[in-house]
Image (cartoon, rainbow over all chains, first blue to last red):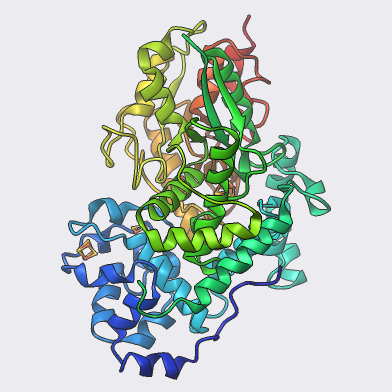
Length: 214
Length: 300
Ligand code: SF4
Ligand code: SF4
Ligand code: SF4
Ligand code: SF4
């Protein structure tokens, strides 16, 4: 299976026009759990919850404010959402019970779909490789995932990174926790055909999901 | 006590020769003592993990999980589904909530599942192994089979994120859950209850994509364990275990620290307390050897 999410399949001007530049409405229709954004009361609790806090260009609270203010490009092109570690700190603290983690992933995923996500964003690359890896056979092949990640920037940088992590990798192999033979064949479920067909169908349903069905 | 049976969702990282293979080994030993029978969900697939969001959409991820639930309901009817990986548990549970609570999504998921010859019509709940231990057994029952004391070992309990949030273990607080400390104490170990990085995130999947930012988190987690005089960290989470163990050497290399803090699973210390050997408790699978626990396991 090739990369599932091709970028830019929704013409950007077309989508923006459909919502008459109402970005909040667009988010509500297209972003996972986007209908929750309007519930935010700007208390700021989530802004202090992210483990990578200082590295967030705009903390979640600010993202929600910017969505309401219609700052479409600034939100979708930001690498803020890609800093989310899925730690769920914010979710358990938010007085309005917003599913903040999902919304962050949802906005990142939507930006990716529109082709607006920052290029060479390492977490974006990892996320896509992870999905492709786990859906290729139906289970994650850790060896191929690891190798793919190290070599994504080319051979030289890959080798340098591998050399740094080599003692760790050898340790894992010796400890029976990383299998070099996974490069050739890994674990996988038997019904790979069924899984592939099922995912293809799900993808097709998602692609045609009408804007207002959320 | 009668044998308890569960439909087991092992997750990718617990397969043989994968990063959490020793979790699986120790869980098997622990379950044998407690007379728990885990039957793998036949032909299970990956749950999609939180980090896959840019690759797979909401429905695709839900469908991946729905396939597992359907196989469990079909082949292991009536058995609760149990996961040992925090991420598996969280993703499955989240998907299940959505499928069970959203008729439109359910209909769409079934349309996709049809391609794999399946139909999801509900399933037993998805539970974490720790929930099974605490709710279906309880600390007193877990204490009974203890044959070796872990009294000489000081454990800092590192719960991490996803076993704790957003679902967590019923009755525990998000900021200071006590169950891991209580499990340690039930096994006769010393729980360092003042350890203050208990629920700090290690960076999770971003340990790979944002190594420097994650290693700062890991440094705090390890340093605080040293501050408390810990012999080792104990965790329920396979990704926490791998991250915190694997990256200590990187942190040492870059920052000149001398970290060598072992990190074990709750199931490993339980297996040892129940009399398992080094091998049966998966204690031969560490990069930083948990020497003190190995010594107790090796004692006759
Ligand atoms: S914690 Fe909730 S209500 Fe407060 S700013 Fe964040 S999202 Fe809004
Ligand atoms: S889940 Fe994401 S958004 Fe929420 S606190 Fe953690 S990093 Fe921040
Ligand atoms: S979350 Fe990780 S361990 Fe769990 S099934 Fe998915 S890839 Fe495997
Ligand atoms: S691996 Fe890290 S990010 Fe994941 S649950 Fe454990 S502490 Fe949280």
